[in-house]
Image 1 (tube, rainbow over the protein chains, first blue to last red):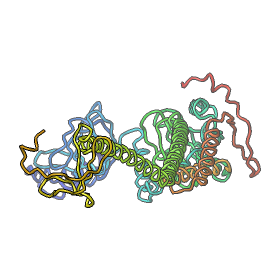
Image 2: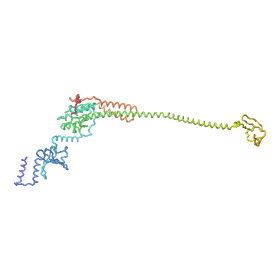
Image 3: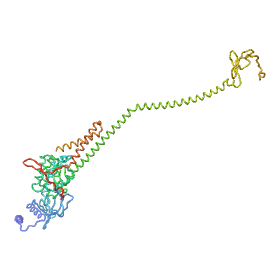
Image 4: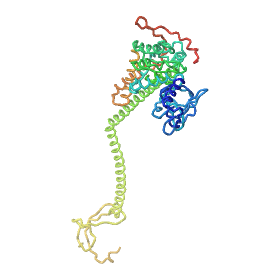
Length: 421
Length: 82
């Protein structure tokens, strides 16, 4: 390469026929720019990030370095927008861009167009691309998710039959939901063919049909270990499953494509088994409350009917009751009346007796018994109160205390004094 | 599968019975019938959930046919979560 540059210089100097050419700084920089940009153009370069300075404009300024050299780098905002990971000093990057010369500073630099973290960078990038594609296709759409059955009595598990994952699942189901049968479709969960096997396992359960739910599972591991669950073939098998799926991959919060596609996703195999245990317990509690509701509703009905019966019986009884009431009232009235009458009668009797006594006292006979007498002029039988009504010879009937006698008037004595005894 | 279907149906039926009985628009005879049916369903469903008759099997495909083989999970009893 130095040879090539020398050639270029040589051509240029030879074209100018003067033995001594003096450049201005701008001219020289312009020539350097031409040489660098034309010969190197677009390059891939790897190095460690240092002096990272994101600017307010959104452009990234940093340097890439290794043990022996430093390269100034710029990444404009239009290019760095799509970067999924965070850039930090010390991060090893693979950058793609073009070498340019920045005259005002007399600096050459790389204008970075793309960057990846070194190591799994390319794979990660591919993963992000796949994820975006599947997302756009609607594979993660919540509307496409199927509800789990009310109670999965038969659980299909796609996992390694010797893994900690299956042991955890079996143990928890045995303890918490021993009503659930488990069918294991053993697969490799790691390595080259793992993704194909996992996908096939899911498909086979769908052909076999006789499970209520499929758990796709693997215990914890590195991102690399879990990678099979990020493969498109696995994501599509889970998406196409007619049987509801639970994805339970890993022991940390590393979300795989399998998690995003499955109907339900949990962080660990144990958590998948716990879903089933929880369903069972919730159902048992529901059944309990149903039973209580039935009992209380039924006793309410009985109570209501009982009350109604009592009301009806009251309504039936009441005419009789009212009659009795009336009778009672009448009886009471009668009693009152009776005593009133008696009282009245008593009073009357008393009065009568008094009257009679009075009458008796006034009776002429009583007076006569005391020695008085009563004379009637006969034959008229008129009581003689005045001698003026008498004349000699009149017939007089005189009543005494005992008996009576007739007499004739011998002489009428008109002078009262003469009549004194 | 048949079990599961009848289970879901039973639960649905039970929910309906509870609603009907709570609604209180039934005659005494109907109520008694529904009550008895509901209690029976609830007991049957509970019994299914409380059953301890689980099997653990392996799904095997041979010559395009599926079969189930017993899986020895005795080690899961003493297994540690690793």
